[in-house]
Length: 196
Image (cartoon, rainbow, N blue to C red; front, side, top):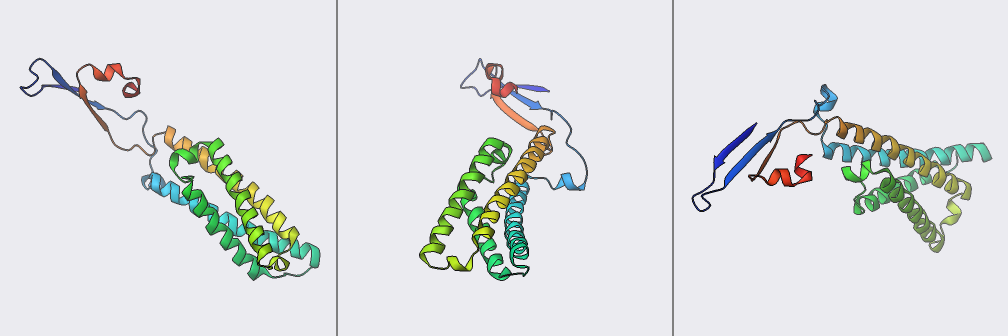
């Protein structure tokens, strides 16, 4: 629908054009889709990261100690370390804008951010543990398995979240309203972006 109206008297021969663009594809219906907002998805990916890091840290510690010593080991120390790693990972990823919708859907950026942040975080924590002489509290096997399993789980999660978010964006799940574009007559046709 196009509405044409004359502009103010200061520009007598021009015409202002207002276009109302219809939504491209209908958004999926249902209770889960009605709460779908970019901020909700960003927070869910953040919470997913935290849960996966903590569970992989505790799981690796328990599995490694049960396999090598047939005992549970110091599960509370590894649980605290897993929470510390999760908090630092989320903070470092947030600083790099890794939880923005555009970066969640860009798999190459999400993978690069995850690998560099995870590796840098483990390097820093190992250096801190070594200088504070608490490295004897942590098993090398548990730490190495936590690094590898945690990185693999995070990359798989980023892949799944990125694909799901991209599909939701493609189906119009986030765009539930009309868009109004106001431009001078003839300018919308001159811009490729406005025609999309």
